[in-house]
Image 1 (spheres, rainbow, N blue to C red):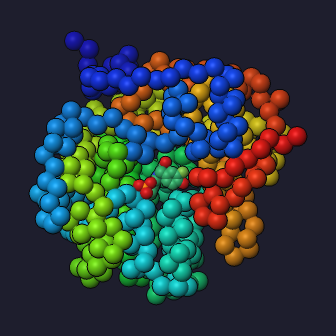
Image 2: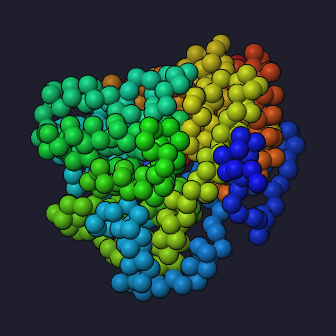
Image 3: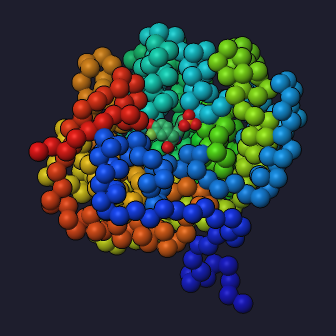
Length: 464
Ligand code: P61
């Protein structure tokens, strides 16, 4: 029998399909009308008009039969639901954090943490911004400061851990503002805006040591920690024999708590939490959750949803699952790369990120190359993707000017356990088709701009 390590064995799903959902096929004329009606913003398309939906991996996973069975065990009591205790147990077992505050999704955990920990004038260093995380820090009177390594902002850099913190940058921030004005350092695993790029255990250990020296907390955005753990196992010296669960635990043990959108790694359609080791911070968070989310034993989730999260957390650290999940993303990325299309390398955890600036070099950032490319891809094949460039970066609250991010990307985000390899082929072929006709593509201008998180609802028109 061939060994497990044979180079002829590719990734494959450790599950089979029990139920299917019909997809509507559309014509180019129908898509043309749909994207115009949506103001050339893929967030505003009706999902019915989408063939392959790679907008996000958030809340779009297929749940397992075990999770669905767990839904039937929902204890919908207002207080003290048994499912809360199952979730608390799962968080303690898998992540090791002491206290759990359930929330309805990730940004609610960010809201509560920001409100209880940040004072006006504080700064929060982090390994690249995330849209909702930064906004909640700003709404609490704080300011986000980027301390990720420079390679993370370079789509072509092959650095294996582009999520790493630049310790010299972090030291400079501490020296400039003082530890008293840094409520915590915010460390994301599988850094989303960098292209799903991992942080290494060695780097996190060094961050921890530096923060310990100055008495600063480390808070972890654990949204895709299991995916990060897979890359550590694959790439970090000395980690190949560790289980995914052991690596996840090692990451969490280096941090003081986490915010979590359970809609990603944890394989559910809704849910999240804040987990903390500090008793006082937990007390403050528990007081806050009842104001904004619901009682501290459900935090905006139904009992059945908490059960599905608890089961999903266990499934998320299964090696075969995570290998197939990241393997499918890599398959799509390699296929697109083979067509000569510029993408962020190394291929990330949860999606393939097209480099829209290199794809459409004739378009200035003022006409939103990534927004334009996402609309063109939809027009070509009904594949929905997400802009992650100038529109997402928004305006600087101090200057009011558009931020001009170094990364102007389109994210093809792969939902977990949902699409087949043939779907991935269709996506790659469509990207190649649009690439072949890229010279004829013109940009967009924004005709409606919401005040907060503008990318969700902004509207555009083609430039003449
Ligand atoms: C996503 F366009 N992510 O990637 P919530 N932290 C991290 C996330 O990835 C994340 C949240 C916190 C989404 C949904 C989304 O600009 C956008 O459960 C690393 O969505 O509240 C969410 O978790 C927030 C899409 C969020 C966006 C913000 O597609």
